[in-house]
Length: 403
Ligand SMILES: [Zn+2]
Image (tube, rainbow, N blue to C red; front, side, top):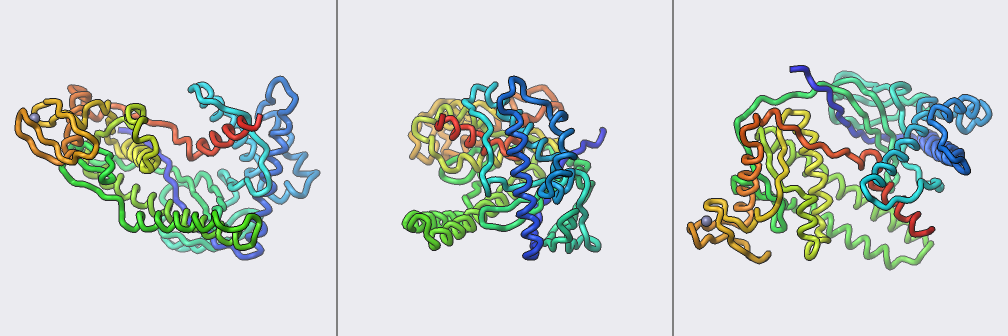
C-alpha cells in the first residue's frame, strides 16, 4: 500500500517582545491594506481579473510603498491567494443554494491572520524542544512548543486572537500512520443526556470542567451587557470575555481530540447518525441544541482521522434509531423524556441511548454489507472552517442585509 500523505497542524503560542508585536501588528495591517487594494481592483470591471494578472503588480507595488516592502514577499502573495479562495468558497456556497452577498473591504482590526508560505520561517531549538520561531522581516519569536514536529513544514499561519494572544499554526505534511485492523466496530449515539453513548453501553458525559467554564462565560457576558458603551470598563470586560471564550474553545477541542482519537484507535468501523438528516427531522423542537456545533466538529475530526488511519466512518439514516428495538426490531414509541427502552414484544429493557447506539451500528453493518470495510470510502466534507468559510457566510449575510 502506498503511504498516504496527510496534513497535520501544530499550534504553538508565540511570546513576542514589544518591538516584535509592533512588527506583527504592522504585518497584519499591511496585509489588510493589500487585501482591500486588490478587492478594489475588481470594482467596475465586467470580468474579475485573474490572480496572476494582479500578482504581476506586486513587485512594483512593494517598490513604491514601504508599507508593503516591509512584509515577506510570500506573505504578500498569500493575501491574493486568500482573496481568490474566499471568492471560490462564496461561489461554492452559492452553487449549493445558500444566499451569499459580496466580499467586503476589511476595516482596521478585522484582518486577523497572515501566512508564511514555504519560505521565510524556521524552528529554532535542539531536539524536540523548540525555543524560537524565526520569521523573515520580523525576527526570532520565543514560543512554547510542547510537541515534536514530524514531517516537512509547508506553511505557517500567524494568528492574533481577540484577547490579543499570538499563535503560530504550522501545516506539516507527513506520512499517515495506517493502523492495523482490530476487527471491531462500534455505533455512537449523540444524545441530550450525555455527550454520546456507544453501542457497548458506555456513556461519555460532557466534561465537568467545560460545563463550569461555559457557565463562567455566560456570567462574564452578562456583565459585559451592563457596561456603558464606549467606556474603559467595557473594553476591559470585552477582553475578559474573549479570554474565557478562548479557554472554552481550547478545552472543548482538547476533549473532542481525545475522544475521537480513542474511538479511531480502537475500532475499524465507526457508525453514527447523519447529523444533517437528523437536524431536518428535529428542527421543530431541537433547533437550538447547543451541542450541535461541537458534534459537527467531532464528526469532522472523526472523518479526517479515519481517512488518515484507514478506518471507516459510516453515517446512517437516523430514522427510527431511537424508537426501534435493537433486539427484535419492534417499533416502541417513546417521548423524548422517556430514558428507558422497554420492549413489550421481546422484553428487552435497556437505556434509551444505548439501544439507539446498537441500532446505529446494525444499520451501518447492513449498509456496508458484503463490501469489504476497507474499500468503503470515508465521506469527507471540505473543512470550510479552516478556510474561514463560516465567517464568510456571516460576512456575506450581513452585507446582504445592508443592501
Ligand atoms: Zn424487542
